[in-house]
Image (cartoon, rainbow over all chains, first blue to last red; front, side, top):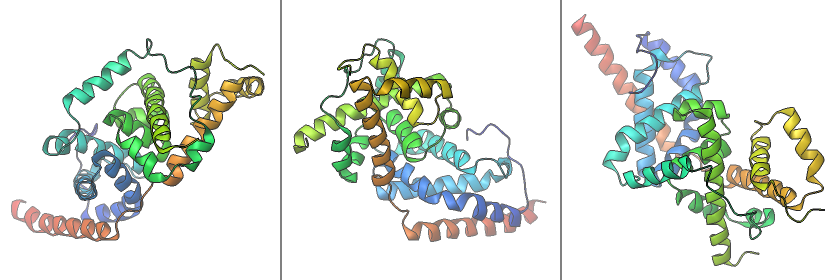
Length: 195
Length: 90
């Protein structure tokens, strides 16, 4: 597993105590992240369970008092990419390549002058399912960064650690992801007749 | 008020950093001073803010209750296995 510190043995009673106190409160957030990644309730539950088992196994490398949520999200993300994606109908290699291409060409990318067809009021009127569907249709790297930033409110620095990318890439990937999300919402709003 | 913004691409990056609470105090002050004179920046700010708020308020689902029980059961099993196996090898 990709954790930066080595596994340490700690007493079982202490491991259980840390797990209940530090990790269990983040189960809702982990489930939401897993659900957006897998787009399937059963797969999301499996992914969260696997993540919890790994977190418990490597609990010795967690330092109480540090940000447990970021630590868990990093394990969940690695679990999804390394194990889960291989055995599921997860994103293809092509999808990842497309994301990386679009990120590396960020300088050349010019977003629309501004989203004249998409207004704050239109977004406010949209249903949660519609916005969720637009997020689900994004390439997985874009989906991840939108959820981490907008739903879970991680800082750019924390996202850089979770995703294992430089902070400059966090900024450019997030900006690009939001532009693509808005393009999807414009299409959606037109199709559904929002004004 | 300006109907078009010649720096809109850059302005949108600053707007997003402000909304994400990652902008410097100077960036935020400079943007807020100019916002009222620029329609695309005003609308861009309102759009980014409403999108972030909509994602936070509308795209979250509660974790199924049985998942808590499943995880506790799995960890209990793991705990028992560790308790049995470790003394055998020590």
